[in-house]
Image (cartoon, rainbow, N blue to C red; front, side, top):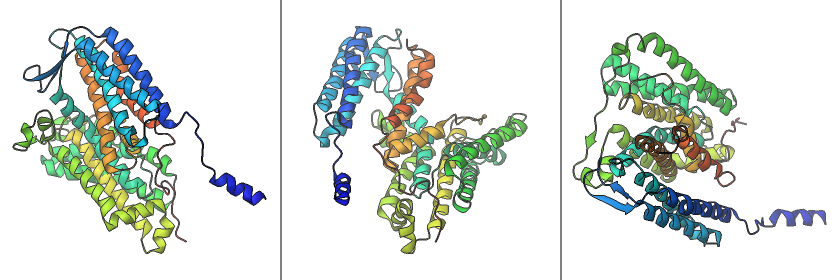
Length: 426
């Protein structure tokens, strides 16, 4: 009797009632739509909001009255929320949710652009798209490093340290050699150094992987900060003046409106980041190495019985992840800036969030990184047009977007089953 009762409980479907997760999402989107219709429309000005297809105010533009645009796109967000709340078929959920969120964002932008000072009431879409990709680059490399580690069963909280060590090594050795490629290789080695420590302590000595990742981040901050003060700060011309990669234009493709100048007139890091997304995606889901990696991340004991060398594969993938993250760090110091102390500024943790938001998938991680990069670029743009929103809140925007995105996925995504669990060969 008791056994039958247990079995009945075990197979009984979970009844979420009326308030399913989808309907809760619809309720939130409905509230956002109402906010757009009632607040953004009221605050928007009856002035044209111009979205130019160039890098400045000149050229062709998409133009709409600020009040009308805020109301119209607010209604789009509201309608999408109501549709989801009413029980939209599951196959349409993602599309309608995306349309609703875009509607909310565009409604917000109509308000902001229309109320900007004269001469600033336009949004240059080329700059926004280009800035989104530039700001997303370290997140893309960092999230890919996380994919390689966590698909293998090793939690990589040390992405921040890998990016930072890559940025420092690229700047230092690029400056000493005067050669960009030496700096790029050094950046990969710097990230691999942090990954080597993670691999040895997590795989060989079974240290808690999350704790070890935090320790390695602090180690990277300490090493790079000390050497910065002893070498780079006293003599920046010798130790902190690495050459920068120039932009490479791809003929014809760079002339595509908006996307062309942003995607096909970039530096090596942009092309390499997009290429790595493609290569790692194909590798994970279309090759024997990918099958073995995923099996090690899900069920290492079963993989071991089939002849997969679990520990060796984990070592290899963790070291490869460090090299990828190190190159991502170099996207700062070999393309944009000189090295400064702790210049990564938490981007490694946002990359970790992008990894989760992207469901441990290379393409998902790319889209999540672009989402966070857009939030960062939007904060920069709003500051430039003297938005009425307080600057402190604008500075919080990328991190707030990170919190909301990850919090919204709690209970909805599942990490690889063996992620963070050390494997002890029997």
